[in-house]
Image (tube, rainbow, N blue to C red; front, side):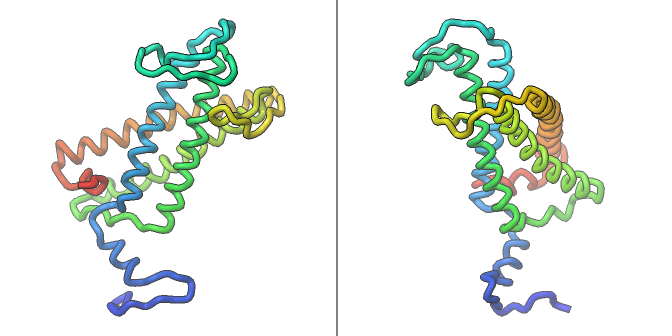
Length: 220
């Protein structure tokens, strides 16, 4: 029995059954999903690097009005107000984190409203289950880590800033701040492990299985 008629049927909710069927049959993710995937991946790696870098900075240091980003000699950022290196990089981490959380929220909305391409028929049953489970875990972790970071900032005495603009003031509750700090850091490690497994899986499909898995996330 055919599930959907071949003719286009549109309900007043705005969903087009033919579009949904075509979306299920496609072999690639949408261009929007691919671009979001790349931006979020770059953002997550940048946040891990920034987190490790800033954690080594001394708490007591002279304030500056300009910063050579990561002391690479590539770009110098001028500030409207002087800040210590640790304060500057912590606020940069928060700013990028808030931006990344917005991208992740958009990616989730896009994922809900646009079905991904079907898995390759060459996948074994355990590969299908592992792929589905890993993707669900990644989405969960990508939300928990930045949300915990935002809550940690809100429960600190400093509050939350976004590229120099005050978003929300700090509540200064050390107990809750430490709780969300622990969640932010611990779940962050789990996220890193999940990403590594995700990358290993992609490389396996590319170089061992030699299938078209990675082409599904390619703009070409």
